[in-house]
Length: 244
Image (tube, rainbow, N blue to C red; front, side, top):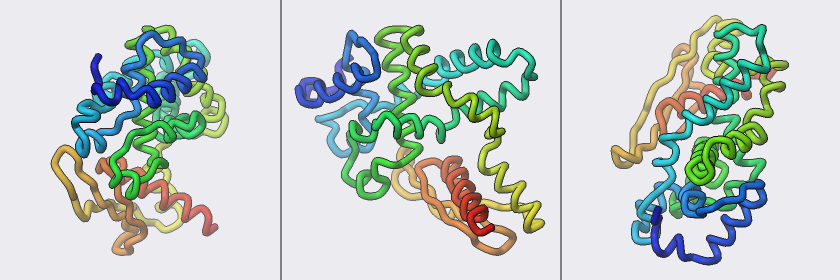
């Protein structure tokens, strides 16, 4: 695959990504898709001559391998758990928060190619963006070295949180958690409102408000309506817990 002449022939960046991949114990054959995994669409919008492709094409494929590996491991590791229990555990493992934590531990943010606006506005600590990079890396491995090498990466860096998830019952998402907390402590069901949608149709930014009745509690901005609601709920949950 030809990503871009400038990017793929930039020897400094090739060596940088190559060292990262080798540090992950991945004996790659073709570096191209690994480079693509770290190219955010924002840089493509700004400099299409430098990077005419970005990692979202790889993201399209990610859940197939990741879910197969996690599903297979859970089925064999927890033979006494029911289908719905295994489904909840799997959701917690493949959830973007866990994938973002993986990216942070592996310092993937240091390798990202971002548009300057993305750098200033979201930075390299954007959890959703980092989760997408992990998804892309998984598929870069799959496309380069096929299933078993991708499986090794998933088991080592993603699946290992399974014990923490099971022991601490971390299977609920924050929208569910904040709803239960608000109903128990305030007798109120939280509501979400999209206040604004900015930028182009293919690159929108959503501003979401979370309310307890008519009381505005928290605001969150994100590049996905669903993710903005989830982040608002997460922020609300930790602020409420810290007040106790």
